Image 1 (cartoon, rainbow, N blue to C red):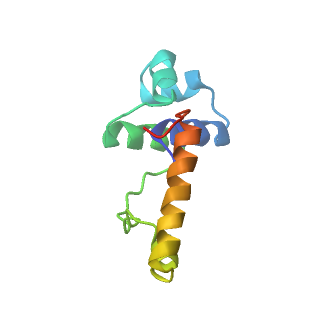
Image 2 (image 1 turned 135 degrees about the horizontal axis):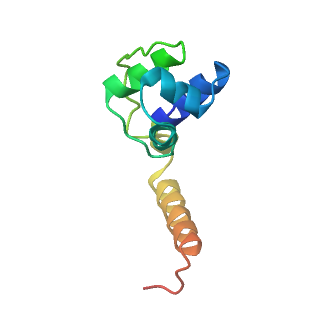
Image 3 (image 1 turned 135 degrees about the vertical axis):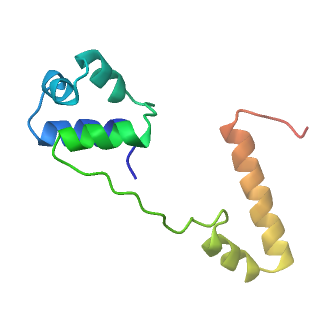
Length: 107
């Protein structure tokens, strides 16, 4: 899934338009287009649709299934472990996180 900035920039460049040309089609300024194409831009759906239409595209919204908040494969793997193996895996993961975060010692 792409962000709004990426969608607008990609549609504009694939249409062979400059920011100024897209701005003219949208009856706005080049500066407004630059802001729209900046990472983190959060335009309204209407503005995004207008920008894409000006570049010869259409905005389609769809609702999809959410990804589970848990790693099903990891859970299945852990269910097959003995309690001692699960404890060892947890301890190894804990040690790795402490190392990655730069923590040392036992406390």
